[in-house]
Image (tube, rainbow, N blue to C red):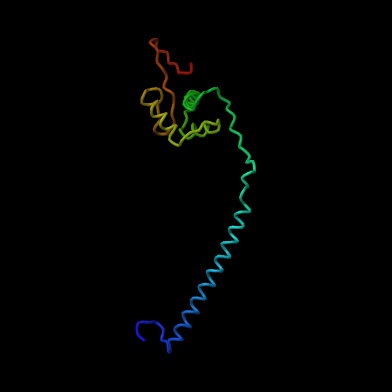
Amino acid sequence: MGGFGHSYKTLQDKARFHRKRAQYHLDRAAEWERILSEIQQLQRLEQVSADAELPKLPRPKKTTQSQGRNDFARELLDQAAETGITPAEIRQRANEQGFPTPNNFPYKLLTIMVNKGKARKDNVSGRYYPTPIILESGRKIRLAD
């Protein structure tokens, strides 16, 4: 009977083989439907009802008088005049104070401040320091002074 992987003696043997194979796949499909149904039941049990009141997380309490994250970052830079500060430390402290900060926020702010001459970067440590202002008398002051 050419072209088939099985050699069937009769057409009835061929039909019997395919009925048996179809029944096997129907049984597997029924088993998978039962498993999916059980999974869906478990998911429904885990879902919170729409009427339930979800607890809201309290926002972090701001302990700073800064109105925004930029002012807060400038204050941190001035406070860390001796030791310097990294962008990661600024972002971490701003998040602790409840200021929403995207990942590039401190880097962009500090780059702008460096370009304007208001801060300097130590390329070895990666820390940023406020640039002191030199008065005509030769006295150096920081912006916070």
